[in-house]
Length: 372
Image (cartoon, rainbow, N blue to C red):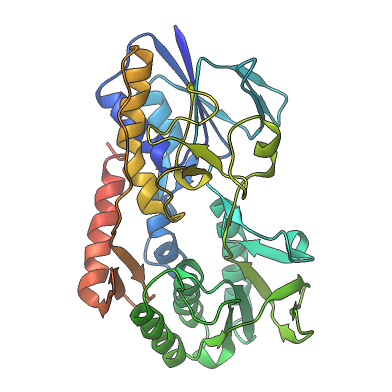
C-alpha cells in the first residue's frame, strides 16, 4: 500500500480528492494534513466578509471529504520535510512517512520589510485568522455603534481593493458612512498594476465614490497598534491594519532541499512535480512552474486540481505523466461590495450587476461539488 501524503487543504487538493472519490486509485492510502477542518474558498471570501454568504457556504468541509475518500485527516501544521528519508514533520511532533507527497499550502502576505507587522498587522492569509479578527471587529462595532472606525489596508492590488470595498459595505450596514474611514496604501503608482489601466481607473472611481482614500507611491516601514509609518516618516492613523501585500512562501521550505526559486516558492515542472524530486508535487500559490510562471491567483490553483490528480495516478501506475500549461488569458471577476462586479479580460474591464450574478453562479457551482 503506497502512502500519499497531502500537505495543505488548498483548492487543488480539494478538487483532486473529489476526483479520487469519483475514481479511486488502487493500493493507495491518503493522509491529508491541514491546520483546520474547513478550508475557505478564496473566490467567495470578500463577499463573505461583506455579509452576502455565511461560513458554511464559503468553506470546504475537509473532514467530510476525508471521510468520503477513506483518507486520514490530521489537523496539524507541517514545519519541515525530509525528501531523503521521505518524512514530513509536524508542529505537534508527529512524523509521517510518505511514498508520494503533494504540497498545496498557499501563501501569506509579505511582511519581511515592515517592522511590527507580526505584532499588529492582520494578514489577508491565513484566512481563518483573518475571519476571526474580522468577526471580533464586527462584534465590537455592533456593541458600540456610536464609535468611528479607521482601517488601513496595505496593498493596492486586486485583493486589497476588493477587500476594502467589501469591508466598507459590511461596516456601513452597522454604522453610517461618515463613521467609516478606509485607507488603501499602495507602494506603486497605480492600483491593480498587474491588470490593465482601464481596470485601475475603474476601481479608482469606485473607491472615490465611496470616500475610500487612495494613498499611492507610499511604502510602509512600520506598523503600530494605532498607526502606520511610511518610509518618508509620515504617520497614517488607523484602528486596524490589514496586510494584503505580494504573496510570500512559508519560510521553512528553504531548508528542505526542495527546488525553490529566488523568492522561496517551490519550483515545479509542467507535470507539477518538483524539479528536485519526482515523487513530490506542488500546486497553487506555493508553486511556480519554471517554464510557465503565472500570477499567484486562485483561478490557477483550481485549474491545477484535475492534472494533479491525473499525474498522481499515472506516477503510481508507472506511466508517463501529462504536462499542464496555465492559460495565458483568464477572466477576473472582482466583487465591488454592492452586488456588482468588474469583469477583466485582456485589455477590457467592465462593471455590471450581470457580472456579480455570473460570479455568484460560478462560485456556487464550484462549491456544489463538495456538498453531496
